[in-house]
Image (cartoon, rainbow, N blue to C red; front, side):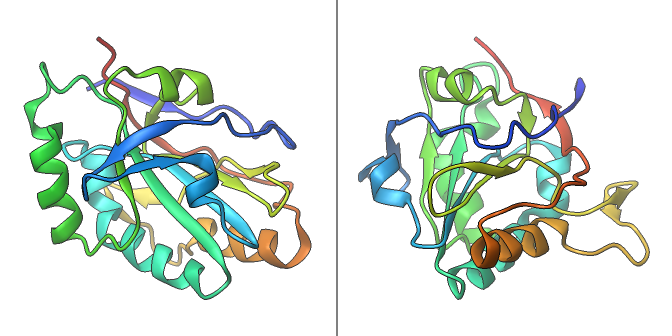
Length: 183
């Protein structure tokens, strides 16, 4: 497992469109997932210990963001041939285990991850109501794959701020995790 960190937030960058199959067998494009007050697009997978460490909290955070009219979508872009734990069928299981009540999409070609510049799992892209990137940080600080003492849900706080002001926090700490498993 190669540890990667996300780059700094490129404030104002627009998301790239996509057309991907979800675990519910429906197709989703960007316009299908955009929220009235913001959108959180995350790149995750099923096997990465960094994702597993926060997977329940991802589901809880998404439910909380819904109250602020922020829609959430997760995209899995790993090579499933060499990483079968990330297969489409295993995505369904992982989503159910973690109470994901948002679209979980497969990016088989890996083009969407490349278009977004995603580098690791998890990699969070938080957009305001104008689809301008405002957050590219972590969910929270982890120590030994557990929440650090007195850590807070930075992702939730940032996206609530985005929903209210249209702007993300100036200070953001990079997300870190396993590199995307390219073909």
